[in-house]
Image (cartoon, rainbow, N blue to C red; front, side):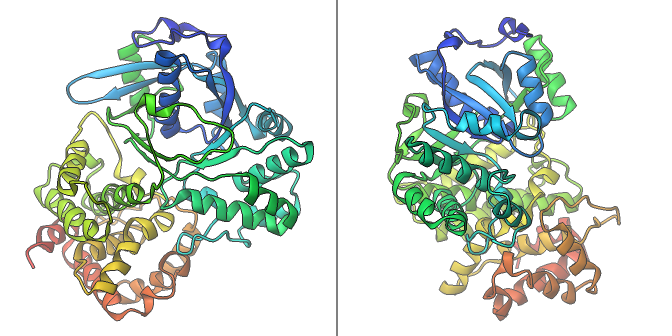
Length: 486
Protein backbone atom coordinates (compact mmCIF):
# COMPACT_ATOMS: atom_id res chain seq x y z
CA UNK A 1 0.00 0.00 0.00
CA UNK A 2 1.50 3.29 -1.12
CA UNK A 3 1.24 6.06 1.51
CA UNK A 4 3.78 8.51 0.03
CA UNK A 5 1.08 11.18 -0.21
CA UNK A 6 1.26 11.58 3.57
CA UNK A 7 4.66 13.20 3.00
CA UNK A 8 3.43 15.50 0.24
CA UNK A 9 4.05 19.24 0.23
CA UNK A 10 0.43 19.89 1.17
CA UNK A 11 -2.08 19.90 4.01
CA UNK A 12 -2.15 16.23 5.02
CA UNK A 13 -4.55 14.34 7.31
CA UNK A 14 -3.69 14.85 10.98
CA UNK A 15 -6.71 12.88 12.19
CA UNK A 16 -6.87 9.17 13.04
CA UNK A 17 -8.17 7.66 9.82
CA UNK A 18 -8.78 4.30 11.48
CA UNK A 19 -11.62 5.87 13.46
CA UNK A 20 -13.53 6.97 10.36
CA UNK A 21 -16.91 5.28 9.88
CA UNK A 22 -18.32 4.97 6.33
CA UNK A 23 -21.61 6.70 7.14
CA UNK A 24 -21.58 8.35 3.70
CA UNK A 25 -21.82 6.26 0.53
CA UNK A 26 -21.18 8.18 -2.67
CA UNK A 27 -22.00 7.04 -6.20
CA UNK A 28 -19.74 8.66 -8.77
CA UNK A 29 -16.13 9.09 -7.64
CA UNK A 30 -15.39 11.69 -10.30
CA UNK A 31 -13.34 14.85 -10.28
CA UNK A 32 -16.13 17.08 -9.00
CA UNK A 33 -16.93 14.96 -5.96
CA UNK A 34 -13.25 14.63 -5.09
CA UNK A 35 -12.85 18.42 -5.18
CA UNK A 36 -16.14 19.32 -3.51
CA UNK A 37 -18.19 17.12 -1.13
CA UNK A 38 -15.18 15.07 -0.01
CA UNK A 39 -13.31 18.26 0.85
CA UNK A 40 -16.05 19.30 3.28
CA UNK A 41 -15.87 15.92 5.04
CA UNK A 42 -12.06 16.11 5.16
CA UNK A 43 -12.17 19.58 6.73
CA UNK A 44 -14.65 18.33 9.34
CA UNK A 45 -12.36 15.44 10.26
CA UNK A 46 -9.24 17.60 10.26
CA UNK A 47 -10.57 20.59 12.16
CA UNK A 48 -13.56 19.30 14.13
CA UNK A 49 -12.84 15.62 14.88
CA UNK A 50 -15.70 14.26 12.74
CA UNK A 51 -15.73 10.51 12.12
CA UNK A 52 -17.98 10.72 9.03
CA UNK A 53 -16.07 8.84 6.34
CA UNK A 54 -16.91 7.90 2.75
CA UNK A 55 -17.43 4.67 0.90
CA UNK A 56 -16.84 5.57 -2.75
CA UNK A 57 -18.58 3.56 -5.48
CA UNK A 58 -18.38 3.70 -9.26
CA UNK A 59 -21.06 1.72 -11.07
CA UNK A 60 -20.20 2.18 -14.76
CA UNK A 61 -16.80 3.43 -15.92
CA UNK A 62 -14.07 4.90 -13.74
CA UNK A 63 -12.46 1.56 -12.93
CA UNK A 64 -9.00 3.10 -12.94
CA UNK A 65 -10.02 5.86 -10.52
CA UNK A 66 -11.03 3.27 -7.92
CA UNK A 67 -7.93 1.15 -8.59
CA UNK A 68 -5.65 4.18 -8.17
CA UNK A 69 -7.39 5.12 -4.92
CA UNK A 70 -6.97 1.62 -3.48
CA UNK A 71 -3.33 1.51 -4.53
CA UNK A 72 -2.51 4.59 -2.46
CA UNK A 73 -4.34 3.72 0.75
CA UNK A 74 -7.51 5.67 -0.16
CA UNK A 75 -5.55 8.94 -0.34
CA UNK A 76 -5.62 11.51 -3.14
CA UNK A 77 -4.65 15.15 -3.61
CA UNK A 78 -6.58 18.29 -4.53
CA UNK A 79 -4.93 21.44 -5.84
CA UNK A 80 -6.71 24.77 -5.69
CA UNK A 81 -5.37 26.72 -8.66
CA UNK A 82 -5.33 30.44 -9.26
CA UNK A 83 -3.07 32.70 -11.26
CA UNK A 84 -1.60 34.02 -7.99
CA UNK A 85 -1.07 30.95 -5.83
CA UNK A 86 -1.66 27.23 -5.40
CA UNK A 87 -2.92 25.43 -2.30
CA UNK A 88 -2.75 21.66 -2.12
CA UNK A 89 -4.48 19.20 0.19
CA UNK A 90 -4.25 15.44 0.63
CA UNK A 91 -7.72 14.06 1.34
CA UNK A 92 -7.94 11.09 3.70
CA UNK A 93 -11.67 10.85 4.29
CA UNK A 94 -12.26 7.76 2.12
CA UNK A 95 -12.66 4.55 4.13
CA UNK A 96 -13.71 2.15 1.38
CA UNK A 97 -13.77 2.15 -2.44
CA UNK A 98 -15.60 -0.23 -4.78
CA UNK A 99 -16.36 -0.70 -8.45
CA UNK A 100 -19.51 -2.65 -9.28
CA UNK A 101 -17.98 -4.38 -12.30
CA UNK A 102 -14.66 -5.17 -10.59
CA UNK A 103 -15.62 -5.90 -6.98
CA UNK A 104 -19.09 -7.18 -7.87
CA UNK A 105 -22.60 -6.01 -7.03
CA UNK A 106 -22.65 -8.15 -3.88
CA UNK A 107 -19.84 -6.03 -2.42
CA UNK A 108 -21.74 -2.86 -3.39
CA UNK A 109 -24.91 -4.07 -1.67
CA UNK A 110 -22.95 -5.14 1.40
CA UNK A 111 -21.57 -1.61 1.64
CA UNK A 112 -25.04 -0.09 1.26
CA UNK A 113 -26.43 -2.49 3.89
CA UNK A 114 -23.99 -1.35 6.58
CA UNK A 115 -26.20 -0.17 9.46
CA UNK A 116 -24.14 2.99 9.97
CA UNK A 117 -24.87 4.26 6.43
CA UNK A 118 -26.95 7.41 6.87
CA UNK A 119 -26.66 9.13 3.47
CA UNK A 120 -26.23 7.91 -0.09
CA UNK A 121 -25.15 10.80 -2.31
CA UNK A 122 -24.56 11.03 -6.04
CA UNK A 123 -22.64 12.89 -8.71
CA UNK A 124 -23.69 10.83 -11.73
CA UNK A 125 -24.41 13.78 -14.11
CA UNK A 126 -27.87 14.61 -15.38
CA UNK A 127 -27.99 11.64 -17.74
CA UNK A 128 -27.45 9.20 -14.84
CA UNK A 129 -31.02 9.76 -13.62
CA UNK A 130 -32.50 8.18 -16.77
CA UNK A 131 -35.14 10.89 -16.83
CA UNK A 132 -36.54 13.32 -19.34
CA UNK A 133 -34.94 16.73 -18.64
CA UNK A 134 -37.98 18.46 -20.13
CA UNK A 135 -40.42 16.83 -17.65
CA UNK A 136 -38.31 15.49 -14.79
CA UNK A 137 -40.02 12.09 -15.15
CA UNK A 138 -38.25 8.73 -15.18
CA UNK A 139 -38.03 7.29 -18.68
CA UNK A 140 -39.43 3.80 -18.14
CA UNK A 141 -38.36 2.97 -21.69
CA UNK A 142 -34.74 3.98 -21.04
CA UNK A 143 -32.56 0.96 -21.94
CA UNK A 144 -30.92 0.83 -18.50
CA UNK A 145 -34.27 1.07 -16.70
CA UNK A 146 -35.87 -1.58 -18.93
CA UNK A 147 -32.91 -3.85 -18.23
CA UNK A 148 -32.97 -3.22 -14.47
CA UNK A 149 -36.71 -3.78 -14.10
CA UNK A 150 -36.21 -7.15 -15.76
CA UNK A 151 -33.22 -7.92 -13.49
CA UNK A 152 -33.97 -6.01 -10.26
CA UNK A 153 -31.48 -7.96 -8.15
CA UNK A 154 -28.61 -7.20 -10.56
CA UNK A 155 -29.18 -3.56 -11.57
CA UNK A 156 -26.73 -1.37 -13.44
CA UNK A 157 -28.29 2.09 -13.10
CA UNK A 158 -27.88 4.23 -10.01
CA UNK A 159 -31.68 4.30 -9.68
CA UNK A 160 -31.87 0.50 -9.74
CA UNK A 161 -28.97 0.06 -7.29
CA UNK A 162 -30.45 2.48 -4.74
CA UNK A 163 -33.91 0.92 -4.89
CA UNK A 164 -32.44 -2.58 -4.55
CA UNK A 165 -30.39 -1.44 -1.53
CA UNK A 166 -33.44 0.12 0.10
CA UNK A 167 -35.42 -3.07 -0.57
CA UNK A 168 -32.73 -5.06 1.22
CA UNK A 169 -32.79 -2.71 4.20
CA UNK A 170 -36.58 -2.88 4.37
CA UNK A 171 -36.53 -6.69 4.25
CA UNK A 172 -33.87 -6.83 6.97
CA UNK A 173 -35.74 -4.41 9.22
CA UNK A 174 -32.95 -1.84 8.95
CA UNK A 175 -33.59 1.91 8.99
CA UNK A 176 -33.58 3.79 5.69
CA UNK A 177 -30.97 6.29 4.57
CA UNK A 178 -31.36 9.69 2.92
CA UNK A 179 -30.64 9.95 -0.80
CA UNK A 180 -28.90 13.18 -1.80
CA UNK A 181 -28.28 14.36 -5.35
CA UNK A 182 -25.31 16.67 -5.87
CA UNK A 183 -25.87 17.09 -9.61
CA UNK A 184 -26.77 20.27 -11.49
CA UNK A 185 -30.55 20.02 -11.79
CA UNK A 186 -33.25 22.33 -10.42
CA UNK A 187 -34.88 20.73 -7.39
CA UNK A 188 -32.51 17.80 -7.74
CA UNK A 189 -33.95 16.23 -4.60
CA UNK A 190 -37.43 16.24 -6.14
CA UNK A 191 -36.10 14.74 -9.37
CA UNK A 192 -34.33 12.03 -7.37
CA UNK A 193 -37.46 11.25 -5.35
CA UNK A 194 -39.44 11.11 -8.58
CA UNK A 195 -37.19 8.64 -10.42
CA UNK A 196 -36.62 6.45 -7.34
CA UNK A 197 -40.29 6.14 -6.38
CA UNK A 198 -41.47 5.70 -9.98
CA UNK A 199 -38.98 2.86 -10.46
CA UNK A 200 -39.94 1.32 -7.11
CA UNK A 201 -43.67 1.45 -7.98
CA UNK A 202 -42.94 -0.42 -11.20
CA UNK A 203 -41.31 -3.14 -9.10
CA UNK A 204 -43.28 -3.27 -5.87
CA UNK A 205 -45.90 -0.70 -4.75
CA UNK A 206 -45.40 -1.69 -1.10
CA UNK A 207 -41.66 -0.92 -1.39
CA UNK A 208 -42.47 2.42 -3.03
CA UNK A 209 -44.81 3.29 -0.15
CA UNK A 210 -42.09 2.39 2.39
CA UNK A 211 -39.58 4.59 0.54
CA UNK A 212 -42.01 7.52 0.41
CA UNK A 213 -42.53 7.21 4.18
CA UNK A 214 -39.00 6.51 5.39
CA UNK A 215 -36.56 8.08 2.90
CA UNK A 216 -35.82 11.77 2.41
CA UNK A 217 -34.34 13.33 -0.71
CA UNK A 218 -32.71 16.63 0.28
CA UNK A 219 -32.00 19.05 -2.55
CA UNK A 220 -28.57 20.62 -2.86
CA UNK A 221 -26.76 23.30 -4.81
CA UNK A 222 -23.07 22.67 -5.48
CA UNK A 223 -20.61 25.12 -6.98
CA UNK A 224 -16.95 24.79 -7.79
CA UNK A 225 -15.25 24.88 -11.17
CA UNK A 226 -13.44 21.57 -11.61
CA UNK A 227 -12.00 21.00 -15.10
CA UNK A 228 -11.54 17.47 -16.41
CA UNK A 229 -8.23 15.99 -15.31
CA UNK A 230 -5.57 15.81 -18.02
CA UNK A 231 -1.94 14.57 -18.03
CA UNK A 232 -0.90 18.23 -17.79
CA UNK A 233 -3.08 18.61 -14.67
CA UNK A 234 -1.43 15.62 -13.01
CA UNK A 235 2.05 16.91 -13.89
CA UNK A 236 1.28 20.34 -12.43
CA UNK A 237 -0.11 18.86 -9.21
CA UNK A 238 2.90 16.57 -8.87
CA UNK A 239 5.16 19.58 -9.34
CA UNK A 240 3.42 21.33 -6.44
CA UNK A 241 3.15 18.39 -4.03
CA UNK A 242 6.32 16.50 -4.94
CA UNK A 243 4.30 13.29 -5.34
CA UNK A 244 2.88 11.61 -8.43
CA UNK A 245 -0.84 11.01 -7.84
CA UNK A 246 -2.99 9.53 -10.66
CA UNK A 247 -6.13 10.31 -8.62
CA UNK A 248 -5.28 13.99 -8.20
CA UNK A 249 -7.69 16.73 -9.18
CA UNK A 250 -7.36 20.49 -9.66
CA UNK A 251 -10.03 23.13 -9.09
CA UNK A 252 -10.64 26.80 -8.44
CA UNK A 253 -10.32 28.14 -4.85
CA UNK A 254 -14.03 29.04 -4.66
CA UNK A 255 -16.47 26.45 -3.29
CA UNK A 256 -20.11 26.62 -2.21
CA UNK A 257 -22.62 24.06 -0.99
CA UNK A 258 -26.22 24.81 -0.09
CA UNK A 259 -28.12 21.86 1.42
CA UNK A 260 -31.76 21.32 2.34
CA UNK A 261 -31.64 20.23 5.99
CA UNK A 262 -33.83 17.14 5.67
CA UNK A 263 -32.10 13.92 6.75
CA UNK A 264 -33.64 10.80 8.30
CA UNK A 265 -30.54 9.30 9.89
CA UNK A 266 -28.37 12.25 10.81
CA UNK A 267 -25.77 14.20 8.87
CA UNK A 268 -22.28 15.67 9.28
CA UNK A 269 -22.01 19.19 10.70
CA UNK A 270 -21.31 20.50 7.20
CA UNK A 271 -21.98 24.08 8.31
CA UNK A 272 -18.73 23.92 10.32
CA UNK A 273 -16.89 23.53 7.01
CA UNK A 274 -18.71 26.40 5.31
CA UNK A 275 -21.84 24.79 3.86
CA UNK A 276 -25.20 26.53 4.13
CA UNK A 277 -28.07 24.45 5.60
CA UNK A 278 -31.41 25.88 4.51
CA UNK A 279 -35.09 24.96 4.28
CA UNK A 280 -35.41 25.77 0.56
CA UNK A 281 -32.56 25.30 -1.90
CA UNK A 282 -34.50 26.13 -5.07
CA UNK A 283 -33.66 29.89 -5.26
CA UNK A 284 -29.95 29.08 -4.90
CA UNK A 285 -30.18 26.23 -7.44
CA UNK A 286 -31.92 28.36 -10.05
CA UNK A 287 -29.53 31.27 -9.55
CA UNK A 288 -26.53 29.02 -10.10
CA UNK A 289 -28.03 26.93 -12.90
CA UNK A 290 -29.16 29.92 -14.93
CA UNK A 291 -26.48 32.52 -14.24
CA UNK A 292 -23.39 30.32 -13.88
CA UNK A 293 -24.21 27.10 -15.74
CA UNK A 294 -26.32 28.88 -18.33
CA UNK A 295 -23.56 31.36 -19.16
CA UNK A 296 -21.01 28.53 -19.10
CA UNK A 297 -22.97 26.60 -21.75
CA UNK A 298 -23.48 29.81 -23.75
CA UNK A 299 -19.73 30.45 -23.76
CA UNK A 300 -18.93 26.79 -24.39
CA UNK A 301 -20.90 26.43 -27.63
CA UNK A 302 -20.15 29.86 -29.05
CA UNK A 303 -16.59 29.81 -27.78
CA UNK A 304 -15.83 26.40 -29.26
CA UNK A 305 -17.27 27.49 -32.62
CA UNK A 306 -14.98 30.54 -32.53
CA UNK A 307 -11.91 28.41 -31.81
CA UNK A 308 -11.61 29.23 -28.10
CA UNK A 309 -10.46 26.07 -26.32
CA UNK A 310 -10.97 27.30 -22.76
CA UNK A 311 -13.44 29.52 -20.91
CA UNK A 312 -10.57 31.81 -19.91
CA UNK A 313 -9.83 32.25 -23.64
CA UNK A 314 -13.39 33.50 -24.17
CA UNK A 315 -12.76 36.06 -21.44
CA UNK A 316 -10.05 37.67 -23.60
CA UNK A 317 -12.75 38.65 -26.12
CA UNK A 318 -14.68 41.70 -24.92
CA UNK A 319 -17.73 40.77 -27.01
CA UNK A 320 -17.97 37.39 -25.27
CA UNK A 321 -17.57 39.02 -21.86
CA UNK A 322 -20.26 41.61 -22.59
CA UNK A 323 -22.66 39.05 -24.02
CA UNK A 324 -22.19 36.69 -21.07
CA UNK A 325 -22.81 39.52 -18.60
CA UNK A 326 -25.89 40.63 -20.54
CA UNK A 327 -27.18 37.05 -20.56
CA UNK A 328 -26.76 36.79 -16.79
CA UNK A 329 -28.22 40.15 -15.78
CA UNK A 330 -30.73 41.03 -18.49
CA UNK A 331 -32.06 37.59 -19.41
CA UNK A 332 -31.40 35.17 -16.51
CA UNK A 333 -31.59 37.39 -13.42
CA UNK A 334 -35.18 38.61 -14.07
CA UNK A 335 -36.41 35.00 -13.99
CA UNK A 336 -35.09 34.45 -10.45
CA UNK A 337 -36.62 34.89 -7.02
CA UNK A 338 -33.64 35.70 -4.82
CA UNK A 339 -34.54 38.52 -2.42
CA UNK A 340 -31.57 40.04 -0.67
CA UNK A 341 -29.06 38.80 -3.25
CA UNK A 342 -26.97 41.28 -5.23
CA UNK A 343 -27.17 39.60 -8.64
CA UNK A 344 -24.96 42.19 -10.32
CA UNK A 345 -22.22 41.44 -7.81
CA UNK A 346 -22.81 37.71 -8.34
CA UNK A 347 -22.49 38.09 -12.12
CA UNK A 348 -19.24 40.03 -11.82
CA UNK A 349 -17.85 37.41 -9.41
CA UNK A 350 -18.63 34.70 -11.97
CA UNK A 351 -16.82 36.58 -14.72
CA UNK A 352 -13.83 36.99 -12.41
CA UNK A 353 -13.82 33.23 -11.81
CA UNK A 354 -14.03 32.57 -15.55
CA UNK A 355 -10.90 34.70 -16.05
CA UNK A 356 -8.79 32.29 -13.93
CA UNK A 357 -6.08 31.36 -16.45
CA UNK A 358 -4.68 28.65 -14.18
CA UNK A 359 -7.85 26.63 -14.79
CA UNK A 360 -7.89 25.07 -18.23
CA UNK A 361 -11.66 24.51 -18.32
CA UNK A 362 -12.30 23.27 -21.84
CA UNK A 363 -15.27 24.57 -23.78
CA UNK A 364 -15.62 21.04 -25.22
CA UNK A 365 -16.03 19.59 -21.71
CA UNK A 366 -18.78 22.06 -20.78
CA UNK A 367 -20.48 21.44 -24.14
CA UNK A 368 -20.98 17.75 -23.32
CA UNK A 369 -24.49 16.34 -22.68
CA UNK A 370 -26.27 19.42 -23.99
CA UNK A 371 -29.61 17.66 -24.36
CA UNK A 372 -29.58 17.08 -20.61
CA UNK A 373 -28.48 20.61 -19.72
CA UNK A 374 -30.36 22.99 -22.01
CA UNK A 375 -33.80 22.66 -20.35
CA UNK A 376 -32.70 23.89 -16.91
CA UNK A 377 -29.87 26.18 -18.02
CA UNK A 378 -31.68 28.08 -20.79
CA UNK A 379 -35.13 26.81 -21.77
CA UNK A 380 -36.84 27.35 -18.39
CA UNK A 381 -35.79 31.00 -18.66
CA UNK A 382 -36.99 31.18 -22.26
CA UNK A 383 -40.44 30.03 -21.10
CA UNK A 384 -40.46 32.79 -18.47
CA UNK A 385 -39.67 35.42 -21.11
CA UNK A 386 -42.33 34.09 -23.46
CA UNK A 387 -44.89 34.28 -20.66
CA UNK A 388 -43.80 37.83 -19.76
CA UNK A 389 -43.28 39.21 -23.25
CA UNK A 390 -39.64 40.16 -22.62
CA UNK A 391 -36.51 39.85 -24.77
CA UNK A 392 -34.19 36.84 -24.78
CA UNK A 393 -31.84 37.33 -27.73
CA UNK A 394 -28.81 35.84 -25.96
CA UNK A 395 -30.74 32.79 -24.77
CA UNK A 396 -31.92 32.24 -28.33
CA UNK A 397 -28.33 32.61 -29.52
CA UNK A 398 -27.20 30.07 -26.93
CA UNK A 399 -29.75 27.54 -28.20
CA UNK A 400 -28.68 28.27 -31.79
CA UNK A 401 -25.05 27.83 -30.73
CA UNK A 402 -25.90 24.36 -29.43
CA UNK A 403 -27.64 23.53 -32.71
CA UNK A 404 -24.64 24.72 -34.73
CA UNK A 405 -22.28 22.76 -32.45
CA UNK A 406 -24.17 19.46 -32.67
CA UNK A 407 -24.16 19.79 -36.46
CA UNK A 408 -20.83 18.02 -36.04
CA UNK A 409 -18.50 20.39 -37.89
CA UNK A 410 -16.86 23.61 -36.71
CA UNK A 411 -16.54 26.80 -38.72
CA UNK A 412 -13.38 25.49 -40.37
CA UNK A 413 -15.16 22.32 -41.48
CA UNK A 414 -13.36 20.16 -38.91
CA UNK A 415 -15.36 17.38 -37.18
CA UNK A 416 -16.64 17.99 -33.64
CA UNK A 417 -16.63 15.05 -31.24
CA UNK A 418 -20.22 15.21 -29.94
CA UNK A 419 -20.57 13.65 -26.48
CA UNK A 420 -24.25 13.33 -25.59
CA UNK A 421 -26.59 10.49 -24.50
CA UNK A 422 -28.84 11.38 -27.46
CA UNK A 423 -25.95 11.53 -29.90
CA UNK A 424 -27.50 9.01 -32.30
CA UNK A 425 -30.81 10.85 -32.48
CA UNK A 426 -29.00 14.15 -33.01
CA UNK A 427 -26.86 12.66 -35.79
CA UNK A 428 -29.94 11.24 -37.51
CA UNK A 429 -31.79 14.55 -37.40
CA UNK A 430 -28.72 16.40 -38.69
CA UNK A 431 -28.21 13.91 -41.51
CA UNK A 432 -31.85 14.08 -42.59
CA UNK A 433 -32.16 17.87 -42.67
CA UNK A 434 -30.72 20.50 -44.93
CA UNK A 435 -28.47 23.15 -43.36
CA UNK A 436 -30.38 26.25 -42.28
CA UNK A 437 -33.98 26.62 -41.20
CA UNK A 438 -34.73 22.95 -41.82
CA UNK A 439 -31.92 21.97 -39.40
CA UNK A 440 -33.40 24.19 -36.69
CA UNK A 441 -36.86 22.67 -37.14
CA UNK A 442 -35.47 19.12 -37.09
CA UNK A 443 -33.64 19.64 -33.80
CA UNK A 444 -36.60 21.45 -32.22
CA UNK A 445 -38.62 18.26 -32.64
CA UNK A 446 -36.57 16.62 -29.87
CA UNK A 447 -39.42 16.71 -27.35
CA UNK A 448 -37.30 15.31 -24.50
CA UNK A 449 -35.33 18.57 -24.73
CA UNK A 450 -37.76 21.23 -25.98
CA UNK A 451 -41.09 19.73 -24.91
CA UNK A 452 -44.07 20.31 -27.18
CA UNK A 453 -44.66 23.95 -26.31
CA UNK A 454 -41.48 25.59 -27.57
CA UNK A 455 -41.53 24.12 -31.12
CA UNK A 456 -45.11 25.44 -31.39
CA UNK A 457 -44.16 28.95 -30.24
CA UNK A 458 -43.63 31.15 -33.30
CA UNK A 459 -41.61 33.81 -31.47
CA UNK A 460 -39.17 31.27 -30.03
CA UNK A 461 -38.74 29.49 -33.36
CA UNK A 462 -38.17 32.77 -35.20
CA UNK A 463 -35.55 34.05 -32.74
CA UNK A 464 -33.60 30.78 -32.69
CA UNK A 465 -33.77 30.49 -36.47
CA UNK A 466 -32.57 34.10 -36.91
CA UNK A 467 -29.64 33.45 -34.55
CA UNK A 468 -28.77 30.18 -36.27
CA UNK A 469 -28.74 31.76 -39.72
CA UNK A 470 -26.54 34.57 -38.36
CA UNK A 471 -24.03 31.99 -37.11
CA UNK A 472 -24.02 30.34 -40.53
CA UNK A 473 -23.59 33.63 -42.38
CA UNK A 474 -21.12 35.44 -40.13
CA UNK A 475 -19.60 32.92 -37.74
CA UNK A 476 -19.64 32.97 -33.94
CA UNK A 477 -17.19 35.84 -33.32
CA UNK A 478 -18.91 38.29 -35.65
CA UNK A 479 -22.35 37.27 -34.39
CA UNK A 480 -21.29 37.83 -30.78
CA UNK A 481 -19.89 41.23 -31.74
CA UNK A 482 -23.28 42.26 -33.10
CA UNK A 483 -25.71 40.57 -30.69
CA UNK A 484 -25.87 43.55 -28.30
CA UNK A 485 -25.65 46.17 -31.04
CA UNK A 486 -29.17 45.52 -32.31
